Image (cartoon, rainbow, N blue to C red):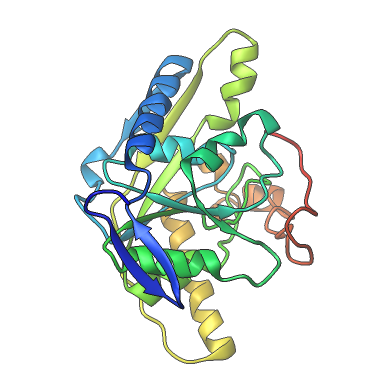
Length: 260
């Protein structure tokens, strides 16, 4: 167990924070080196980074390397929640999230393991990274799944929005001998949120908070990528269909998509 590590018991499961401190410090260094070398990399809004948790880092999810970019700028220990299956990532890079160690969401199964882990970590004043859309099957913004809003309301933690632009162009640009222009825009923390009621009313409130989260992220990415959250009717029309959640009637392992 790492020095200064704490353990919180949530539903009889232990979720230590922080974890893998030395290994993750090394991986973050590699991520910064790779992004700085292979891309034209820019970060804005670093003054908005909170000094400590608890809070959730939320961002748009267009590329399988989005978590790498977020981890590279994190000055605090950060835990990620993400899908167990990575259908849009090449097999050759799937070792990265496994080596980092993240809490898997078993989409389409009703499993709450990752959400319990997230709650336990936030209760330790930790930092959680989560991509509210629930996957990277499109390159325009889509409505949030309820996970981020659920954790934010359960723990009354703030949210830190990040807009990520250009990562989908990294490998196509490298094949042409060029460096893609990549930008991470860090917004101001917002929240906390509270909800009340039960059942459908509770879900309606979580959906409303999810929309507020995505609207904050939309402000941090180019207008043409705002999809469902664009003010331009033509962009919203072009984005129709991307809001359909691939795992709505499927479980992990049944969704296969085009690799970005």
